[in-house]
Image: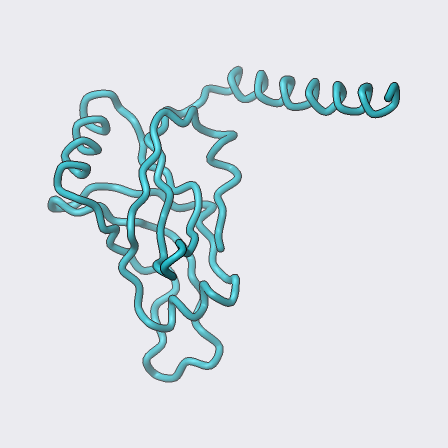
Length: 146
């Protein structure tokens, strides 16, 4: 439903988690319509809970007064052991929790793929661009030469 393409460019992804997300009814309907963005969002641990901040799910067009706030904090559903592990990694190693995508699993539940990530420096980003361009060039050469 929503993908954070920029995260793989800005961060080194070290570990991934799948978390449930507590949504209101109109948020689920808006996500099922393919609306929503997590491009500028991040997750943090507040009071023994993991919270998704700055994600944008626009108001459902057919919603009434029950519509939701587009940029509210959304609670992520993880086990206490996982939350403890995330808190330790964030505090000790200086990692960041970045959402990679929001999707619906086979049972129809909304899930968020979270990544423990380390930020890239400018020279790392340049290296990523060079690598990506070289792979494109390789594909072109292979296609042209058969």
